[in-house]
Length: 546
Ligand code: ADP
Image 1 (cartoon, protein in one colour):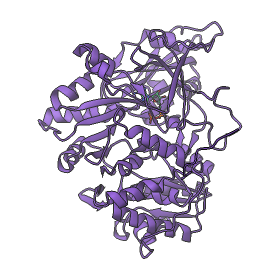
Image 2 (cartoon, rainbow, N blue to C red):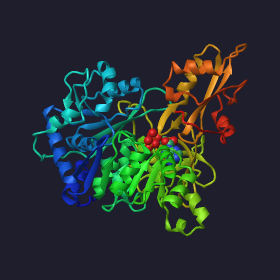
Image 3 (spheres, rainbow, N blue to C red):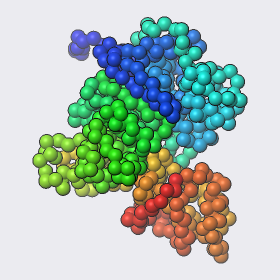
Image 4 (cartoon, rainbow, N blue to C red):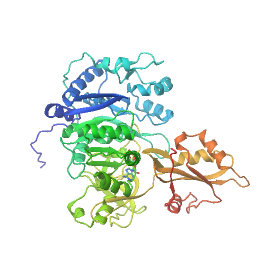
């Protein structure tokens, strides 16, 4: 006989996080940079009141459960309000990455069939270009006050402050199934169109609970969190959810991510915890070294999105007293997967060994399972020595992509392939050793090797092209292209570069192109990327190209 527990089955809904913060940490501040010298401050209670107003305004536009509402916005308090107002009424917040190409943005807004778009004034020129192609949009709201909205050729745009003004500061939030969709984030794959990861209320709340734990990010009301990673990247690294859940002060840095601005914010607001990709910190450490400034309040920073260099971890600790928590994640897993926080066993190890282990990507948080399998046989190889494909399973990992539900992405036991190659050591710390997905991550943004190769092969003198990611001092990885000419042709590197510039975005252009006679091939005649990656593993680029 099935015996059910006799406990309340309260659904885990996102609005409960902010409601809790309003009730128990109502005065704890959210600080938001909204312009060159403009800083907005309020507490969670006031934020909640405005979120209620927003919910009324959305309802007035007949936004209903399941409708998609897009944002093109930086980290500000208004964007934060949308995270709650939209999902609170059961609609879906679609955070669009403004750094994507015009075609990709057009594709994803149309694919998601977004009904509304909320955007920062800075992105109006982008929308002016794309608006004629965005057929599903019924209204556009600029995240600003009336006087902050610049001249635009767009007709009938709404002003956010007017949009929410006058509505009641309470809302009778609907109670619904925690498995309903709450937010949507597209990730660009190796080739083809971006794919939508559709988070649920349940996955979001459980993920936030897991991430805040002491053994993970260890966040609480004493903390002041600075999310530098953009809120449109990979579910905002969960920061807008974790901060109110634990009652932490939240500092939202706005559009400009320059080191001097970030350093000023850290010192002024007494930031204790920040999150960013390595490239941001490379620039920050350079700035601190040159200026002689310090960041004394900062206790910890979580860094991920690309591998964190060991030197960065030791510089942070030795020069600035900051503990780095190396993080591995993916948009598909909400995005937090592993964190390299030390356990007592690691603390007891000799300093060098301890430091080496903490450069790894870390241990899985409770709730997320990891397994390493050998390429073909799908045999588990968690022996800490043999790298294999990394698979994940858990309540905040994707089961499919939005409007591609017929494509099965999990294996029979529900595991999701990550496209990363890793080992897990005897202490349970995972280390990424390679990537099977054919992409390059430059400063936190994806470049498709395959698209670059296809573009190069469009050149009349190019027979084969291979692109791999090589280490770069500033951008972590940059594309490096090898080209085999067609028989009898002698292409010039400069011409190939010019040709590519007509096909791909400027920041995708390979930093180096080499003409070679042959490329290593697999038994089936494909270019053997693993051999190329091995050959160039110690090759490093420097300079400011992007
Ligand atoms: P995010 O924005 O969280 O990095 P993406 O989905 O854009 O999410 O990228 C996920 C991929 O980025 C991973 O599968 C992995 O290849 C790479 N990645 C993320 N974090 C790390 C890390 N700490 N070390 C190495 N690679 C990483």
